[in-house]
Image 1 (cartoon, rainbow, N blue to C red):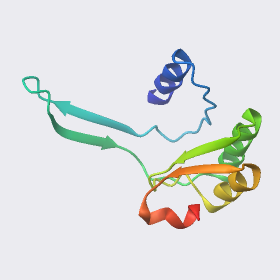
Image 2 (cartoon, helix red, strand yellow; image 1 turned 45 degrees about the vertical axis):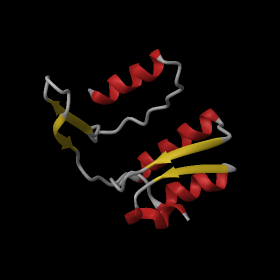
Image 3 (cartoon, rainbow, N blue to C red; image 1 turned 135 degrees about the vertical axis):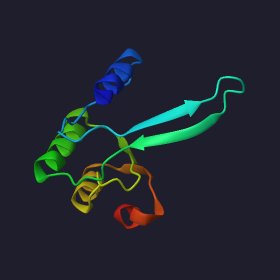
Length: 110
């Protein structure tokens, strides 16, 4: 459901978005804000660490190839989406790969 909302928001704002649909749930972050000072009191993350199947990796590569971008931004927070094979495929096909990652998986992006 949240993935569909994200896809709709991208479309409504002119952002080209090529989703790869999987059975994995979209990571959702719920923030609890108090009303007087509008300060965040709590954040609850609903997420599952996952591993992409080879088919899902191939779909991601095809999605990038179909757009023929001059660069790609990879935002990976060590949740299991980015793999060595996927990163190698992106590096082989693109001149520029911009990365926003976590130190725990930085070796994927060297």
